[in-house]
Image (cartoon, rainbow, N blue to C red; front, side, top):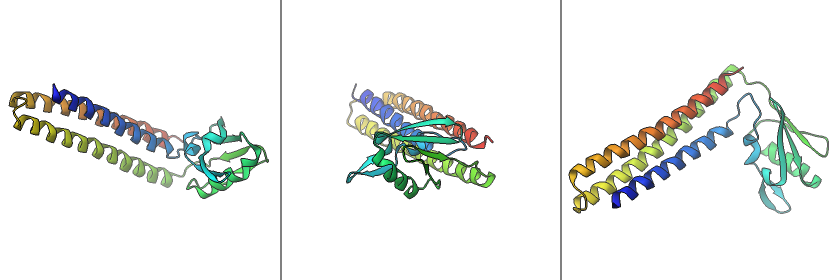
Length: 186
């Protein structure tokens, strides 16, 4: 049925919206070090912008420390510059071959600010999911007006669409709850 493809497409798009939200939340710095925090930083390397994770290995030897080991020793200063230019607010320390990033513990005020940011990003994800639902619902209503499906089928499909929407919205809520819990850990 034509409308089943609409539901499948909606499910795929909603899944992608959840993934994007999950990736955005992974970058938000908690009290713990995570390679995700620096992976997306672009480094000026031999005249081109390259993601950090493509020119260096990133490891977490301790809960509050990241160690970045460039594959090419000549990239150390470029990586340091990129980290300083990013919005991490952390000064890298280097011995010429590896770079260490030590994350200070978060203050209570900073934790509250980060929770607000997490909730805002989550709401953006939910809005994206609701927009997908609205577009698919409009498409299904056009199919019904064209006489390709009955009004009863439309109601059944709308219920299924709402069930899918609720499932992905709940998934975002779960991701947010986990991130908030992570931020509140001392």
